[in-house]
Amino acid sequence: MILLDTNILSEFMTAPPAASVRAWLNAQNTTDLYLTSISIAEICFGLQAMPQGRRRQLLMDRFELFLTTAFESRILSFDQDAARAYGAIRGQRRALGRPMSNFDGQIAAIARTRGFSLATRNTKDFEDCGLELIDPFSFVGSAQ
Image (tube, one colour):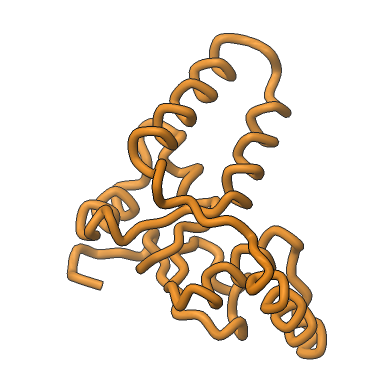
C-alpha cells in the first residue's frame, strides 16, 4: 500500500501533471493508493488562500470530484496510534538535527503505523522516519 503525500496530490490539480508522475501513477494498482485527511486539509487551505474567482472555483470543484470519485474509501485519518508515532518521529528527527513540519510528521506517522510506503517529491523531508520512500517525479517507466 502507498500513501500519497500532499505534493503528489497537488500535482494532479495542475494541467497537465508531470509526465513522470502520471506514468508512475498509471503503473500502480489504484486500490493500493491512499490519501490522508492531513493532505486534504493542506489542499483545502491552499485553495482557500487563492483569490476568489473562476480558477479557484474550478480547482475546488476538481478537487472535490477527485476525492469523491477516486479516493472516497481510501482516506486515512490521524488516529491515536498515529499520534503516538508522531511524537516518536518528530522527537527522533529533532534529536538528529532534522526537524520536520507538523503536517509532514502527521503524514509520516499515518504511513508508519499502517505499514505503508510514502510517495513524495520531498524524500529528504521524510528520511529517518522508518518509511519506504518513493519519488514519482523520478519515475522512468519501469515497475517500482
